[in-house]
Amino acid sequence: MRIAIIAPEDDNHTAPVRWALEKAGYEVLCWAGLGWSPEGQASLTLPDNPGIRLASADLQAGDVVWIRRPEPPSLNPAVSEADRKFAQSEYRWFSDSLMYSLELLPVRCINRFSASRMIRNKSVQLVLAQRCGFRVPRTLLSNSPRSVRDFLRDPSPSICKAFFAHIWRGNEDRSVAVTETFELTEDLVPDDEVLTYAPAIYQQRVSKQFDVRVVLLGAAVCSFALYNPKRSIDWRQDVTQGLVRVESIATPLEIEQQVLAFAQKSGITFGSFDFGVDGDGNWWFFEVNEQGQFLWLDEFNPGLHLLEKFLAFLTSQEGAGQETLNARAALFPSWQDYLNSPAPNQVSPDQPPVVPECMSRE
Image 1 (cartoon, rainbow, N blue to C red):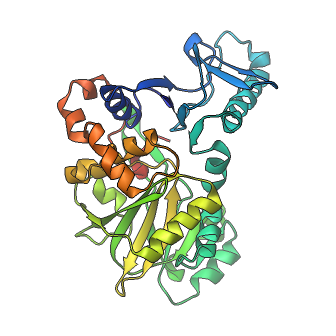
Image 2: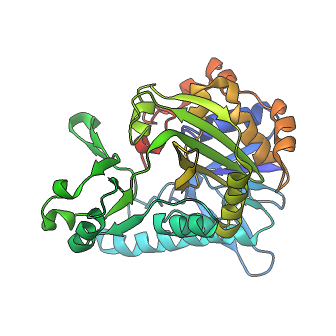
């Protein structure tokens, strides 16, 4: 079995996963994505015995492909300006063809590209979550001033958040601002024109005791409580300052069943779910990131051993349960072992630290 990781080799999750897999004796192929140079070239052979070659390596039956974070296609700089738009389009279509065609090969994809493209949409997440029985906050996705004002007339507290994380950078690439969830009331709504500058997600605010990050690993569901002394609406900013305490907690049976039902309906086998737990102990679904950052949990609590569990999931038969993953986890080095090795020094200094999505360069 070979593990193919579709991401740059110096990606902040790819590098430690590759290091740990190779330490355990596995062959690992890292491929950043389609590009004009030899390391970015690829071939797809059809229709009999479909096959894919990434750089100089042919994918084989039984391989595992982790579609972590492919880079956008890289265009040959020698292409003339008149042909650039055409070449970009061809590269984009071929890149998608490769990712979708992986599902036709006898390889295991984590996650299938078709599932990942669908589930990254917040509206799809919320509809599926409700159908699976999760508590879902009242939500509006809109760029219509009238709809936004109507939504905020409800007396219950509301929040506003972006569809995806974004960083505004100043001089010398220094971060000047990042998207963050914030409370919004009717009297604080800006002029109608401002509301049309960008769509946003408006949502009922849940009064939380604490947050929970749930990591789906095939048939296993691992839950981690996030205790934030500042009781911030958006805990991710406080994570970057080291203010959040992370502890492993038991997943309620109902929540575990709902997460697995969500996975079945969406087609994903791996992902990071965010929940809030209210004063009555109810779990509220907020969102899921199908390739969300997860090693920061080990960074905050080395006793969790999530890296080893992920590696056990990656190298096990599809559908392996919690007991199997726990038993196989001992085959792999830990996050602390990685930090104590020379390997972290080989990660590009341009890579962000291992933190949640709000600070990643997506």
